[in-house]
Image (cartoon, rainbow over all chains, first blue to last red):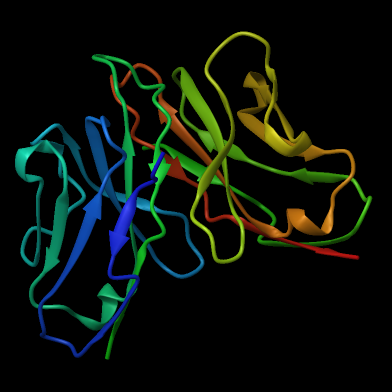
Length: 117
Length: 115
């Protein structure tokens, strides 16, 4: 079974430039998560999708970040414009969640390491 | 708000030594608890999880963790570490009554095992 796929693995951009990250979850997983992991810290949730609906985006900085999950499968996270403080690893995870349950196992992708110069 | 503390940021051990990594959380309600591991160059993967029942949970590769509700702790243990256990370990919790798995992660503990 293929795991969560993310691309690109690494991205270096100059500040004020746009950047986009792509995630393909495990086949059949209805829930998709985007996390940001700063150096020396654990992952922090940015947004969660159930199918194509963003059900928790309270941690997403909406002035510059956007995300979409068309057709409830692949997802894209975009930053425009990027700032120096956006340098981090952006992780995608997916799970098969049953209604009302909080015990689903999240499977993580390898992440995209973003460096903003 | 929930938070997770992992008190040891770096741990260095020799092979065959015993391991215990601390994890404490702050939340008064019912929680689900997880330990994730990230081996060098690999992605985060689940090591073990606790939802209910026996507070001593066994995971992969000989790891176990004990949930002590009165201490708000979920420490990870392994009786004899191997060089291949070198990795970063993350404790995470969620609100079991929240209806979905919003994981709150600790800052992680880097474990280095020397032959």
